[in-house]
Amino acid sequence: MTTSEPDRPVPAHPTTGGTPRRYGFRFDPVFRLPLALLGVRPAATVVELDADALTVRFGPWRLRTARSNITGAERAGPYRWWRVIGPHISQVDRGVTFGTSTAAGVCVHFATPVPALLPGRWLRHPGLTVTVTDPDELVRALRAPAPG
Image (cartoon, rainbow, N blue to C red; front, side, top):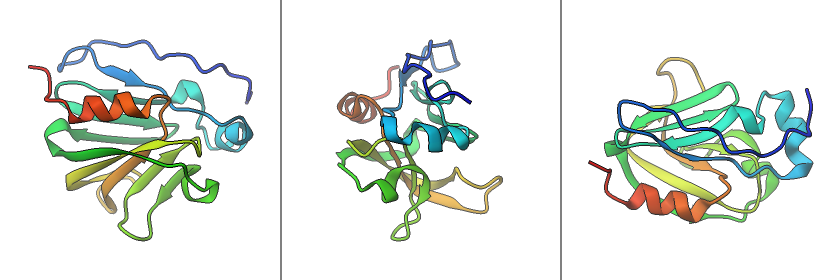
C-alpha cells in the first residue's frame, strides 16, 4: 500500500435522495501509514449527506442512518491522537469515532443508536465523530433542513 495517495475529492453520484454532498477526511501525514494498514485511505473514506441519509465510509467500516435520526451536530477538537485516530468506541457513551486527524472534527448525535463497527446489530452507537476537511461546512449541512 502506498501512503502518498493524494487527498482528492470523491466524485458525487446520484442516489434516491438526489446527489449527495460529499466531505473528505483530513489526513494528518504522520498517521497515513498506520491508517493505510487498516484499509483507511483517502480514496476509501467519505461522508455523504443527501436528503434522506447520512452515510460514512471509513475503509472497511460503514455507518448509515436516516437524516431524520440526526438530532444535533457540533464542531469539536482538537483531539489527542490516541483518542481519535482510527476507529474508536467512546468508553463514556459508546459513540463511534472515525478519525484521521487531530485538528478538528464533527460530533453527530442520533435519536436511535446505529451500528457501525461490528457486523449486524450487536453494538449500536448514539453518536459519531468524523474528522473531515471542512468540519464547519458539514455542521452547517447537518443542521440545515433536508432539501425537499
